[in-house]
Amino acid sequence: MSEEHDYDLVIVGAGPAGSSAAFAAAKNGMRVALLEKENSIAETVRTSGVTWIQSIKEFGIPDDCYNPIKNFSFCSPNNEVTISDSVPRAAVLDVRKTYRWLAREAEKSGADVFVKTNINATVRDDKGDIRGVSSTGPKGKTTFYSKVVIDATGFASTVCKAMGFAIQWKRFGAGAEYEVKVENVDPDTWWLMVGKQYSPAGYAWIFPLGNNIVRIGVGVGKPESNIDPTQRLKEMMDKRIGPIKKLGKMTPMEFHYGLIPNDGLSRKTVFNNMILVGDSAGQANPLVLEGIRYAIKYGRVAGEVSANAIKSGNTDEKALYPYEATWRKEIESKINSAGKVQDRWIGLSDSDWDKELDIIKELKPEEFIDFIKAEFGLTNMIKLATHHPKLAVRQLFNLVKGK
Ligand SMILES: Cc1cc2nc3c(=O)[nH]c(=O)nc-3n(C[C@H](O)[C@H](O)[C@H](O)COP(=O)(O)OP(=O)(O)OC[C@H]3O[C@@H](n4cnc5c(N)ncnc54)[C@H](O)[C@@H]3O)c2cc1C
Image: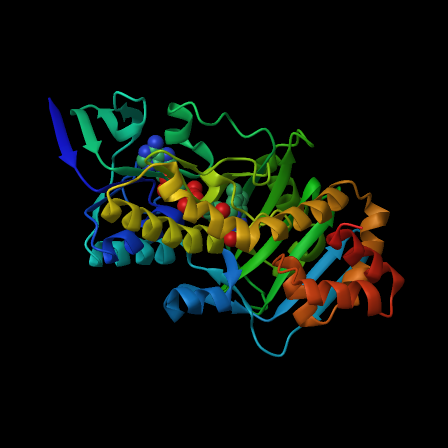
């Protein structure tokens, strides 16, 4: 048995990037199919869901989708610092609720959402360019033809790999996390934990969601370390190291595991009739490996640019290039600068981390937020690199500037 569909735009993967692309294209009058392999949107959670309230407001994400965060605590083996802000600027998302809201917005704008649709092949025209995708399951083959295909499959990058445009990421982060009900937690404060006992190449975290629920997790850089994050997380929770011991009785509710690319912006993201967005394009801030806000933002840009190209009757690489031009202009230099800080952080010993926290302690809340978000505005960087009273802070920002 086989089934065929014909759309203007087909988007593979209904994570934040795919749903946002579907929303923007459907709003621009396109006939859109959004294809997801799982049984429901966000059935499996693969992220810790930290993002920024400014982005949440910009995207129109409802207030009941997140827990606001005002205080940022760090600990290394022998140091601890808390940066307290006057208002909450960070947030921990209810990932399932948020991702389902994004997909629902796409549906409300007219996109057709297909779940249980695992795409495993591409359809090419006589020039070899993509013209659709197909899934083969127990009920036979389903083919979706389209003028443009967006690969929003995340780390897997299924469509661009099937086209031969990309190979497996070489450098990536692997993260494991438990969502846990705990006895004691300050819902306004997140914890980042650094040093070898947490992660030899990465960091661990406690992110509060409200209602005495937290996400406790650990991320490990590959290939820098061969530690299994799941094993390390269990050890950390069993031994209750660092701030974990303050949480009191812990009842794990759900386990999350995920992979995130960390190869920088190494991929080309537009081809004839095809765009890569979100993790499939490597669009993540490498400092803390956060990619949700870029996935939503550039998902929308990808949807809009695809719609314009389809309306013009030309969907070749050049017609789709405004998408790549937009994200490169907005985030390329920030991601490259953040990559330099990440390289410095990956090499730090435990005692170096103790000292690094002393540098972080010197930052004002707004400076810290810009830093961790990789919002390295040039004026701000020059100011910090030239005029900050502490030499170590000046050195850190000189590194960001590329000196
Ligand atoms: C452990 C961990 C913690 C993280 N924490 C944060 C954080 O706190 N904040 C932050 O901003 N970012 C975080 N990230 C990164 C963030 O999760 C990603 O950048 C973001 O999810 C990228 O969105 P996406 O839509 O591109 O991909 P995904 O969210 O991965 O979505 C891809 C979708 O495509 C579907 N799919 C895949 N293959 C196919 C196929 N063949 N056919 C059909 N559907 C398919 C998948 O099921 C999935 O629904 C974290 C990542 C990890 C691994």
